[in-house]
Length: 272
Ligand SMILES: [Zn+2]
Image (cartoon, rainbow, N blue to C red; front, side, top):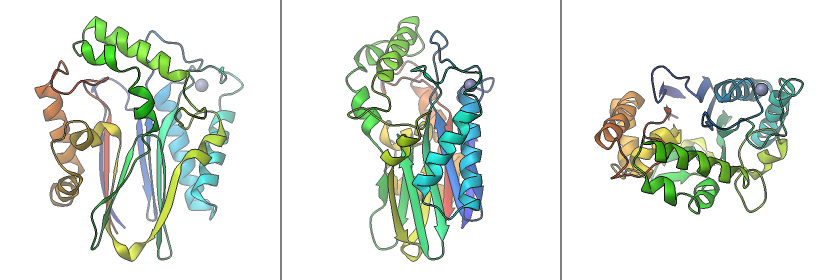
């Protein structure tokens, strides 16, 4: 695999809550779910610590173990919980969480796991791009987005609506009928989307946190085909530059209502 990647925090003075890591045969991307400043999380470490710790644990697991990606994710969630269950309140509904994408090449097969709303795109030879995204969080969120979308991005009303939105979403996290993310419960791993394809059928793959995929799935400024071509021609940095350009052109969210005016953005492009 030949990999190029770029990652950038939403604001230069704040930690990047995305995690991206790779070995010659594996790629892992996590997008930590931020907690608004006025909400408690029960954890003194924070979201960036959580996503970076779980991400590096998963990468180590993928290189050391032939187990299924689901099993490696369940073990990783458990191991990460054990690193702070003695000092943090992991029963808190706002405990740090993250989306997960795991991609592994073994022999002639490319296997993947997708949990929550990061996006994996497979550029298949002789077929349209295959887009794998777990939409349960977005579908649940549609019920609560109204007040947030109505307020001008960055205004105190918007911040308050975002906070209320996130609090409402906590009640649906990691329960049947809601949405699933990596947090404290290893059973979340069983809720991930998984699959495999023969590696010879895949030209390349794109792995995007939602801060990068928004160029296509929120802003509609490119199709998945165009995004793959952009990654191939100009690389992940250029894709993120275009996302930032769109965000700056709509600072109040009047054209594209969104919870975060800017978001941590990570893109990896892997030629198989
Ligand atoms: Zn903690």
